[in-house]
Image (cartoon, rainbow, N blue to C red; front, side, top):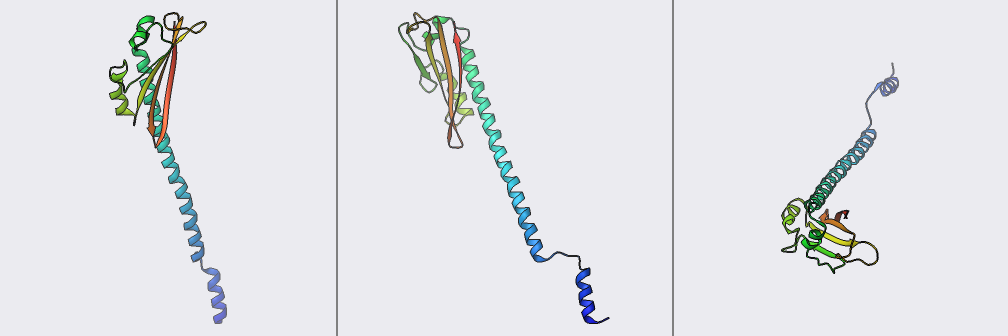
Length: 159
């Protein structure tokens, strides 16, 4: 056989990849791996957000339950309201407030966390606590997560 025939035959029988094909394959693989890695990071953030949201909701619920056994009048007087008041808001960061004892747990579980309780008289006309037929109690927990403010609120009406 001639040398030209051997050279042509050798080209047909080689089963390797060219350098261009290898570079393209590595580029595609790198793109896919980066996409998958970013999904893991996003999933981790979502998991943390869900955990803190659950903890904040649990704290709101526990604060509400701690005042569940109070009578109608004791509910608004516990928060420092009098019969002629039309609204009252207290924060867990205020010393001496009815929910100040919760601040240690809130701070431990939530970054820059604060709870507030707002009570509003419910009833016909423009009621105050002395003439109300119900009291709406709203517990709100706010905190910072990933440099963004977050909050959870729960409300109930007592009659």
